[in-house]
Amino acid sequence: MSDTQKKKRNVYSFALKKTDSPIIKEFIENQTNFSETVRYLIYKYVSENNTDDISYKFNELLFSNAISLNSNKNENNNINSINTNVTQSVTSVDSKKNNESNTPKYDDEISCDTESLIDEDIPDCYK
Image (cartoon, rainbow, N blue to C red):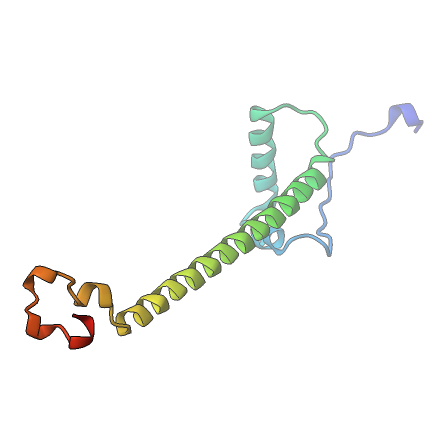
């Protein structure tokens, strides 16, 4: 048979790579009929998009997910850092409040109302 008269392919294979996410294997193991699942996914994709070659899209998806995971980790680190700073600030304010409550506030406790003072109340050195 010549190259121009090749038979059309009717058997397709699928293999997992060692570097594939465990979620792919878990998904496959949860299917009762893998062939029907693949058909469904293909029909769904084609109905929403088209039949163009998408073999390169898997690597794009992995790359974009890796970037978003990294940015989420950075955001979480920033949030944790902010939370830590806020917690430290609140703790610092609380400890200041505790220290202030133990210290007498002379301005509030001693009134300087001179009209209510009697001469006997004023020490001789201040007369």
